Picture 1 (cartoon, rainbow, N blue to C red):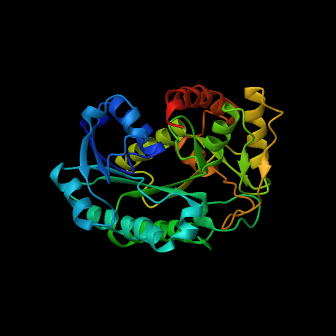
Picture 2 (tube, rainbow, N blue to C red; picture 1 turned 30 degrees about the vertical axis):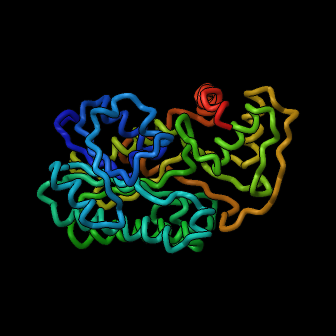
Amino acid sequence: MTWSSRTVLVTGATGLVGASLVSALLAKGAQVVALVRNADPLRALNRHTGLERVRVITGCLEELSDVERAVVDWEVDTVFHLGAQTQVQTAWRNPLGTFEANVRGTAHVLEVCRRHSSLVRALVVASSDKAYGPLRDGAYREEAPLCGKHPYDVSKSCADLLTSAYHASYGLPAAIARCGNIYGPGDVNFQRLIPSTLRSLLRGERPVLRSDGTHRRDYVYVSDVAEVYMKLAEALWAGQAAGRAYNFGPGRSHSVLEVVSELQSLLGAEALEPIILNRAVGEHQEQHLDASRLQNELGISPTVMLREGLERSIPWYRRYLEERADEQ
């Protein structure tokens, strides 16, 4: 089966990865349905061509009937569940809202797919390295227990456990992708490290860091993430990957200060030293993924490493900020 024969639901379609995924699906000829809470004109989906070909359903994950309407009305056979509250600091301030979106919302997607198993043949759930909780020994591996400690981490642990339960109990054809920190063109969430640092440096200002700069993370480029989600769906169609979780990362972590240094180097802005606030809460010191399962079982690995990804991102942010200079 090819993508041109598929009708696909994407939750979280207006986010960074969702918009990239929708664009890639359209390019493959898929029929795309997007469950969208609101039509914020600054969101990434609205900056991609082909939006007029997306069937947009207004609704939210917290309402079971909205999810069910999207699947049933359009006879969806493949679901990408990306919709979530994705910010660690927001989760710290508003844990209940995060649990409603990330746990209840995931339960609704799973239940709708279970109820309509005659339609839905593949479900890819977008997760995170945060689901593992604190790093214990070198790198996260998929067989490690899910031990989230802080609100955002716990919400992702719960979502993954729910997905595993629906596969084990009902045979739901679901796979989980746990990625590191995702970045790239289209990300206008300026709470995040790379967008905020780029904005500061492009304005000739010193970047401001919430943490002490030593926290280490895996950074994965947005188009690589969209590609791995699609490859997992294809594996599910072929009878592979169901009930499996897969880590996806570059094989190397970078500290916050290393990322800032790369951006300074690319922009010739080494004189703009970061302002270090050291006020971050609910953040683990280090998170790093062992992605060998994905490589060994499905032959999938990242193609864009950090410096190249940052180089690709800079022109997009330069244009974006220049277009909105009068709004600042």
